[in-house]
Image (tube, rainbow, N blue to C red; front, side):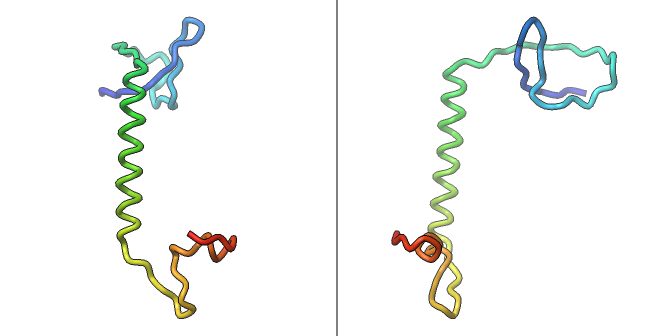
Length: 84
């Protein structure tokens, strides 16, 4: 079985960031690749782009209007009296 996990090296020990579902004393082969700041920056940029694309889809979707005339888009105005 192949599985890719993230881990942190601390005090001479690799510590997985997620629990492993392996029996005790299971032999594994580890291939290391360290993350660079550029890798982290690219990941953050990709996440921000995905959020912006999702927000655009939400803004374009139609909003159900109740009989009182308020829509979901007016959430803050309804709750806090703020206008958008």
